[in-house]
Image (cartoon, rainbow, N blue to C red):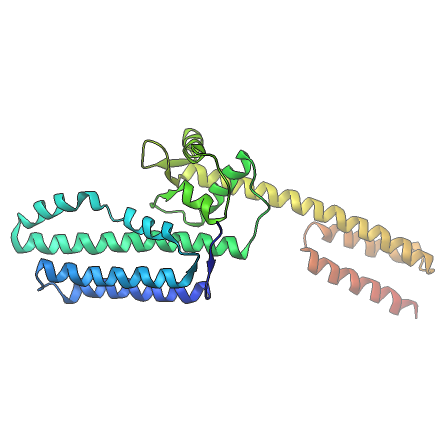
Length: 277
C-alpha cells in the first residue's frame, strides 16, 4: 500500500511544527496544574495531532499513529509516576518534563517518516523486487533521517508499497546489523537506525556511482564531438581549424556538467561558422 499527501508536504510539516511549539508551551505555562489537568491538556493535544495527520495522508496512516505511540515509551509510564511523584512538587515537574519530551520524540519520529514519504513521492525509484535492492532502499531512507531515532523496517517497506514475506523485515534488519551498518532496539531487529559505518558505506557507494556516471557522460560527450567533427568536415570546414577547438572540448568534457558542456559546444560551432563567413 502506497501513501500520498492529501495536500502539500510542506503544509503538513508547518502544522506539525505548530503542534511542537504548542506542546512546549503547555509545559511552560501549566506547571501549576494538577497531574490530572496536565494529562488532560496533553491528551487533547495528542488527539488533535492525530486528527491532523489522518486528514493529510491517504489512505489512513495507521502506521504513523502506531509509530507515534511506540516512541512514547508508555510501558514505563507507571514506573515514572511512582518515582517522580515520590519526590513531591519537584518530582511532579520532572514527570511533566518527561511526558512532554516523550510526546515530542513521537512527533519527531513522525516527521522522519513523512520526510521519507515525501522523498519517495518526489523521487520515484524502480521496482524494489530483490533482497539487495531492499538493502539499498532501507539504507538510503535511513540516511535521510540519520539520527538517534529508530525506524521500523516494516513501515519503511510499507511506505513505498514494497512486498515482503512474513519474517523478511527481521531478516533484513539482522543482516544489516551483522554488517555493522545499523543498530537495532529489539531482539528481532525490526526497529533500526543507521550507524556511522553504515552512513560512511552509503556515502562511498554514492560517490563511486557518481564517478561512474560522470565517466559515462564524458564518453557520451566525446562521441558527440566525433559527430560534430564529421558534420563540419562534410560542410567544408578545415581540419586545422577544428583541431584546437576539438581538443579544448574534449578536455572540458570531464570538467563541466553536461548542460554547460553542450553550451560550450554550441558556442564553438557558432564561432567556427562565423569565422568562415
